[in-house]
Image 1 (cartoon, rainbow, N blue to C red):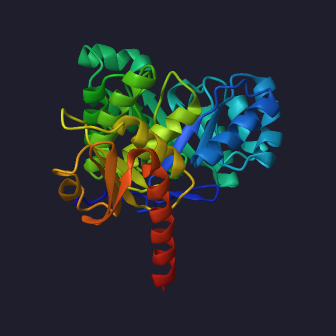
Image 2: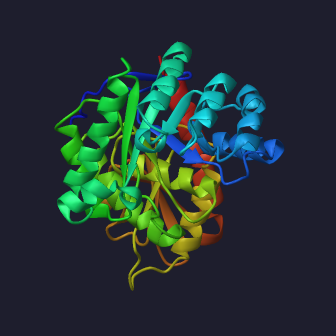
Length: 359
């Protein structure tokens, strides 16, 4: 089992980032921030999906003026995303945001950065320093000849030093790139240099399918290295899908669990039940359960119970029927059309028994 890198503890609203705290799931609204009702509705939906920290774009004064009401009504801590205009950053801090995402190099010089950092210190608001492969400084492109992991880390360190020069250290760092190998290499290199919490994400990862794959590989590799304190899966899709994928990445890497995990086999010529439909139906039925169970849906009785021996409960298909088993032991045989209903009854009984045995 991997060991997580120990990073500095940073407080963001009621959340702790770093310092051994659980990895935080982030997303970002895609509404116009100035449309307060729409933005709050999406934030509430993200909260219900499992999001723990939400970023909103603040591109202009109209968006900044909406922040006080959004912050007051949001069920999640708000991160304000600011570029170029330090006045918007100051307004966001006055509005009560929990975290500020800035690029210190484009905020207007050290004097203006100092104003922002000083106010962040007064308000006890953390800063996320974001470096993006798509906007790397010209001097670093000339120095390295192209965007490299070393160039991204040097940019981040320059920005960190600018903020530290203001006497501030409540910092989270992100190194974003659409290239998975580049993003992974940069974060690994950064971890050798500083102990600030790292926010992981593959930027411009793509549509739901390709973006999920690229994000899972990039974020997952770093999580298995023991790196990463917050994550955001960037998809050209609904932010709700970002949260769903993030939860699955954390589950797959063993970093966190969110209710039951349904495992199922890829099927073969022995499969004689509608395995895909059954697996999907069970996934839907267990969405409201928060206990971290492993539930198996296997295509046949030849290897099913044995292959899923570590599962708490499972199904192994037969010819128009299935076996329901508990921790590898078969407990009943059920016709295919009653498999899901019978399985859910067994699951509810299992949960009741577990609850009775809890201290």
